[in-house]
Amino acid sequence: MARPTGDTTWLDLGTTKLEATLTFYSELFGWMFEDTGEEFGHYHMISNDGAPVGGLMDVAGMPMPDGTPLESGWDVYLAVDDVDARLARATEHGASVFSPAMDIGPLGRSAMITDPTGARVGLWQANEFEGFEFTGAPGSPVWFELMTHEFDAAREFYSTLLDIQLEPMGESMDDGMMRYLNAGPMDSATWGLGDSTAFMPKEATGWRAYLAVESADPAAAKVQELGGSVLDGPIDSPFGRIATVADPDGATFQICAMSEAVGESAAAGEPEVGAATAG
Image (cartoon, rainbow, N blue to C red; front, side, top):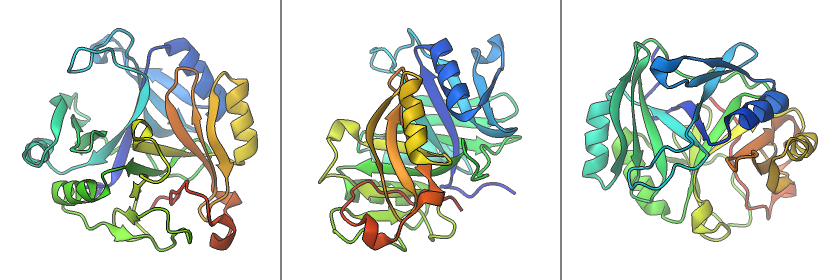
């Protein structure tokens, strides 16, 4: 069954330090990497205990559309029914094309845009390949979110682009610091939209991926042992104990121990939010 339009479906990691990055993630999560060969630019497929997670590519020396070098980072892809039609709609509503629509062999068709708020996100039209699996196991993706200073503009854009209804969270932080919406009902949403104006610098905004760990504090310590860094946390939330970390090449992501979730009242006052559970 095709993944619904608007659901998260894939993760890409661009790195400028290929060997160090492969070692870091294999040691942290136990991930396996399969080089797809020269035809696909030596794109590496990532699997976690046999389940697909995402892809990785060496982007050292590759330019962005404006000619500046690509930096390391994770990109999130959203499922769409028709890449070309959704790409045209995106540009009509203020987005720019980061990479044009193209076929990825028999697997599907992809494109990447920069939305009107400046956040980069991919679009994926599946053919033979739907995307990652929501297994909930350590090392697997469990939640995604767009954090932005332009909340209203982002809400209007993604609602229009994807024909989805963004809905208030079933649980929200009591301190009222931030507005947060899920991309659909709480029991089936795979990502959220948060207003981070009050607590996050604009340069830190954008799409974020949450990866499951058994326990947040040992995982954060392991990140540092492997040459990465802990940027925020770990902190408690109703959805798990969460930390923002970076790999040795500076690509940031979130780790989440869902088994360490605490009651909403205990987590009140913490700005780091994410439902950290996928439908």
